[in-house]
Image (cartoon, rainbow, N blue to C red):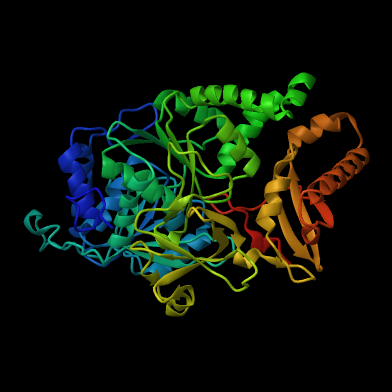
Amino acid sequence: MNYPYNDLNHHTLPNLLNRSIRLYKERPSFGMVDKSAMSYGEFMERVKQAVELLQINGISKGDKVLLLSENMPNWGVAYFAITYFGAVVVPVLVDFHPEDIISILKHSEARAIFTSDKQFKIIKNSKESEIKLIINIDELKIINKPSNYSIADNLSEANLISTEPLEDDLAAIIYTSGTTGNSKGVMLSHKNIVTNAMSSFSKVKILPSDVFLSILPLAHTFECTAGMIVPVLHGSSVYYIDKIPTPSILIKAFSSVKPTMMFSVPLIIEKIYKNKVLEKFNSSFIMRHLYKIPFFRKILNRIAGKKLLKIFGGRLKFFAIGGAALSPFVEEFLIEANFPYIVGYGITETAPLIAGSVIGEKPRLKSTGTAFAGVEIKIKKTDPNDKSGEILVKSPSVMMGYYKDKQKTAEVMEDGWFLTGDLGYIDSDGFLFIDGRSKNVIISSSGENIYPEQIESIINQQEAVVESLVIESGGKIVAKVHLDEEFVNKKFDALNSSNEKVRKDIANYLEEMRNNVNSQVSSFSRIVKFEEQLEPFIKTPTKKIKRYLYVD
């Protein structure tokens, strides 16, 4: 594959960064919302400072370095510093349970840690003997060092960064937060990451003048590659929020940054649609009924789309959605609203981009688009009568394997193809459609495949539903549904009614919903029972429901 980056033939992170410093030295790079971003030249100076800090304290090529921090400009500094001389970065999601973080610390054999003030308490009492030093990422200063550790005083500035990684050297180990409960260390080489970032040219044109607002955790591969490395590749600027991205915080950030580009998970745009758009259309009898008529709905959605763009700051030209399936009814709104979105598909093991729609071209409803540049996709069918099968991927971005686990690596590789575990099909135009995870498929009593994610997308269209989960229980299809508390209180006058009456009203409402949903699915996919899920579902840091916690 010929990428349009002729001056980046050696696909390593240091080469990518050096190229950007050469081209964009004076341009803004990373900053916090409401503050000025440092220039790329200043960013490089911080990277060199961090490299020296690591090397002069004994960290060398191949050593693992944990990166445990919230999103901030120095996250990228630490990431590029660790990989600049061939050490291996181990980004960890701050939402992981402390015991899981310590487990990753042990399993990865990390010798150093970059951590923020907020996360330091998790690892300060760790007794791991492999740890050489702990660095405060906020200030790029050493927090503490074992008393029996001696500084490598034989290093001088002249021979610092004397080692240079090769394309096929290990660059990062990403510990997944999968919904199956099995976290694995995905090994990504420099070539895996850099070629994946370069493949973005086939879907969207990114300019140095573009401004990204980052709201997803950088320790997740999607945001790391697409939301950090891709902007660096093109000399764009990125801004971070130092608070939980609640709707009010996001709206302020949109106004301040006026982003041209963003990456998101479906849950965020779905909440915005339900709370900002649908709620308004349902606020009056006339509007509610007009919205049910396709002709008027399209007009109303177009008007809502213009208002939504203003909420986002007025400059948005690219809003990428990935990490989970986007509800079709929300996507239908985005299409009719002329909102500049694309849907993408990727997996940590592919660094992660696999497929995506093209900005500026009309999206295909329910599709995750076509393959990125340099990526091959094929479908492995087990049933010749079923158009769907397992999605297989081959590209320069496919991982090196799972860290310390050759058996699991062998299980997901087949003649150079990575077995994603996702089920889907490709239409005649090359557009990929995903049905769900192979592990989630339910086999009906008559042998048909039931894809719970497809049923959930229908359930989630219901006004009162926040999220849902379709599972098999006792040989029957059951839906667990978490309802919007504000909606329930308003509809059933919950604050002025007895608990017994409210529970009965909710049960009747769920039964009505069940009948409505069953009228929209095949006979073998019909749900026997709707159960109210009182508490929000437990999710991964990327907002996917941990299914294994709710399956018998």
